[in-house]
Length: 257
Image 1 (spheres, rainbow, N blue to C red):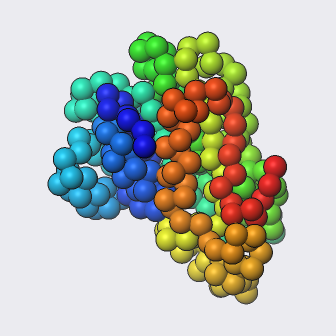
Image 2 (cartoon, rainbow, N blue to C red):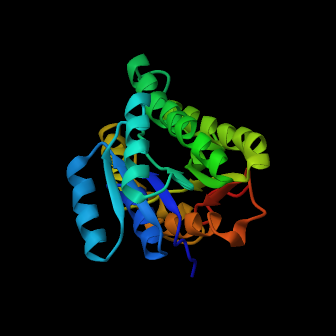
């Protein structure tokens, strides 16, 4: 549907779930992709699969909360893929099921460090490359939890509200450089490690897992990682050239605004 030949994309959180599906979709559209994650084994497995399909990929075991690691990985990706990134997908993230009553300061800091500071680090490193080359596209993977406070999700909500604010602020600052910045806000997405972890934590606290909440979703099903990848593919395409600063819900109707 789209042609991204000539583009170089960085996808963080690429080893599994939403990030993996986004990387696969971009490769299918002709994009060269730098795969970043803390899971080196998962990254290598994906890289082997994509290279067998003829894709040009770079692999980086990267903790996005470490600015120096991000800088080194960006330089490596630019060298291996022949150009600096024109697309950045900030998909790395973590979550926790906890309120102000049972969450710890350490867990709160960790969530903010990965979800918020990690996104900042990647943008801080790659945006100057985009401005030098005349433009680019950034997609931040936020959440509908970034639009509505939810129970037992204090740190996660705080981090995703922050991502939406960052998206809007960067969109205003970077428009003059030809850089569009948008966010995607997934609803309840299955077949991801975060979903598995959240369900396990919920069950341990006597709360229902996602599968027992499907009746709340107007479209009657849990989301799939490819549902998010499809929207990301559109947002970085020329068909979305008049869109910036937006936070697009992909929730099956669970959240509308």
